[in-house]
Image (cartoon, rainbow, N blue to C red; front, side, top):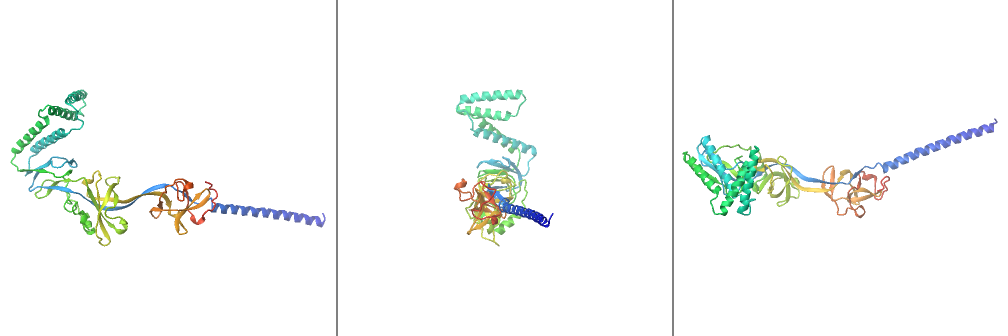
Length: 428
């Protein structure tokens, strides 16, 4: 092989090496380019626009206040109550008889039985619900009820005996009343009252009967707060007053003691709850503002309320009283409670804080529409350190909306995009 041929072969080998390195470099460049584009587009973090709701609320220690009618005895003694604790009663009924001194258990039991029978008779006498339209129908119903009673007792089922008895007596009384005859219930009540009088005459104790003036919940639980905080003074309390009252321990009283309340009737149509707040916590709330109240220890349900009073500030703290007419089970047995003041219910699109950005002085987010980044302003209805809720606009169609719509892809890295930037990998 001559020298020229050898040089040609060397040059040929060098060209192949150079071509290989060029291809290699181009391949590496392509990989870097693809990776760069991927970082710019496909790896963008996004969040889907979904509707959510939260309560703008404040948790506080509070104290309950009521309109409570108290009953006080002038002497020590024994009380015979006409109603159990927690029962709702109408106004102007006898709620208790107090006997001066103490009476033996047997006599007390007789009096209780007679009084309970009177209450049952009065209930039947006043119960006009589901009564037949005429005496003939009433007679037919008495026969039907009597047959049911006979069948069930023959089968040793006594669960409805008391109900059947009341139903039969009520219908017989109705028949008698229609024909001008004396009511069995009225006659029975008179006999029972005579029985009570005979028992009372057999004992030498003085007695006094007590009647309520307002409708409400009957209770023998006297806790000592009744004259300290109530419907009359709760709106006048300052933050220091409220703090002092809330530090008090409830009393436990039993029996009848001279010049001390022994039972009460609680007006259940309106109640009050008070707590201590700062101006920052109150925000825009004022007297007359509608709010909601939840007492987690009693119920998970929030009830309606109205700001009744806001005291003058003391050390930048306010005594705030909320009134409500809504019912909560167990409320009238409580006093010191933990409660939540719900200022408002907020709903809207839940958006992470990291998605927010400013464009031309307006706060908003970038969303992906048809593979393109689009800026959409937000209207905050709620905000905390992690997310905001943005108001849902009327339009629900993507093409018609200049705002955020349901299922929008919200870009969580707004610094990586700009208006109308093509976002590869997102064509919808």
